[in-house]
Length: 369
Figure 1: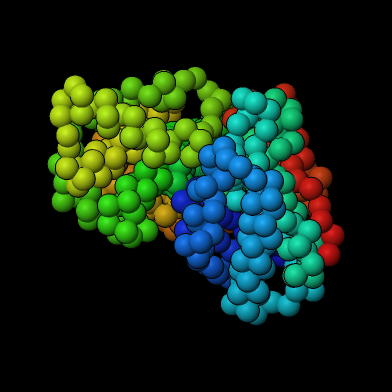
Figure 2 (figure 1 turned 90 degrees about the vertical axis):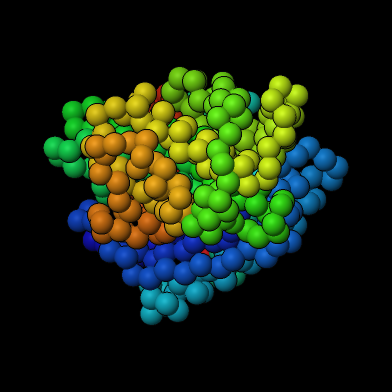
């Protein structure tokens, strides 16, 4: 028997909330509707501020969690309207929450959003806290989407990879006859967005146009690619805790002392190549047999980045996940809806070979309506 779930995803790009309504059962998934609610600038700034150790964090995070719950509730109402559904028809809202700190090496990952308040506002069961059980079992708590990628996108005979380009990029290897491999490759849009916001006051580099106007600096690119995370073994995951503006500023200063300054457009061009090269290097190292690469996430709209990936991966067919039946912008929210369905069935949602957890675990916590 199939049931309706609403998946909510707000990722490291900090642009807003993606929501999808899907009907899920053993026979598969049917997309019923989608919606997007943008983050106000004040919310984005509060999330960024909480990435850093500062005073009064408990109060600020609790208040922000309440504000996020209101935005999540607005996304739920929007997707209900867009799909023609009533709240009584929905089994559960599955809310990823907004990541504030990701520190599996210290035994925790923290996503906020006040799921109890969300359940109160929506009148629908809410499933949240999807990462902490994997961390408790010794895993990274990320990425969690490879299990969904395997269920939805695996081919019986063609080596594929699924690449989500959000603030952080993550890769899933789907190779027939081999275990699924999934991990964060490094920055996707995060540094590109931060740099253009700092210099031009806009949220993102539309189609990669500003990066395309600059000249990549090879000496800076090599300094950036020397980050130990890129050479680390699996399992691994990362986030804004590492690849923030402080990380970039330290390496720009190192480059200035060794080679001189670079103009702002040149830095943007180099950051685009950092994303592209770190992804291509990860595929060469961990998924060398890949013949088809399917893209999802906001980075799909960055034509310059996609073009660079194509040039670095000759012989690999590259397309958006739309070609596999699920629009690129809806994959992550759909993945968390699927994880909520797995929770409702008391079935495991993690892949220990991906996260490093000691075994399969049912992921999530229930906040009844």
